[in-house]
Image 1 (tube, helix red, strand yellow):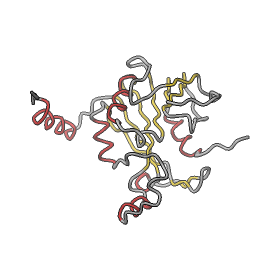
Image 2 (cartoon, rainbow, N blue to C red; image 1 turned 60 degrees about the vertical axis):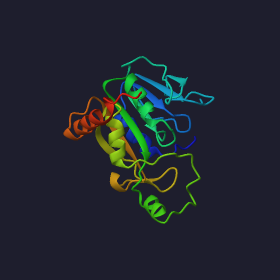
Image 3 (tube, rainbow, N blue to C red; image 1 turned 180 degrees about the horizontal axis):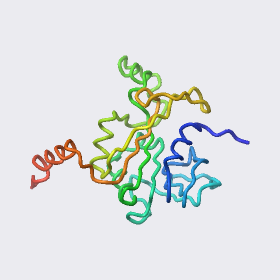
Image 4 (spheres, rainbow, N blue to C red; image 1 turned 90 degrees about the vertical axis):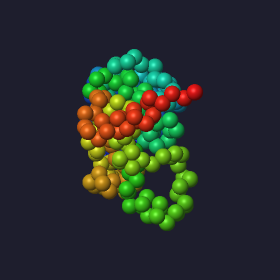
Length: 211
């Protein structure tokens, strides 16, 4: 029997997923722990065989358009994807479109405050910078703003721990984890910081007419 990679992360995500689930970017790491009303794997490249617990697979690009109706999905999983794509705001808004009101986005991405990453940035160590296809590495405050302007409210941040290898993970607080999971809910944020930003945008940009 083939061993499952990163079981700690996958189990944590599976526990938070419910209902009709889209697992976007699932091809390289399907989640065998997912349970729900319907589990749909979405990717730009599909595996030859459908994972046993998935209902179906759909070939689609989240940076363009998802082939699902508005307000039709309960949970979207975006595991290790947001850091690879160029138009992340459009992708977040497209996911927001297909989620039901109060639907949940589980977005897993590398933690820029992971100590090896901090040291590499401080000393401009480029040795490992080109070993992946990451385009962006998002500080928490930037993720928060991206979610706000895409129609999400950040509920919490969960730790994915530190991977000692592909199969063993050391649990840690989310502040020092290697990867984190942002748990966001489809609803308009009501906090004053979001309202302040929206007011600034309206005053400075939204009323400007470009000739």
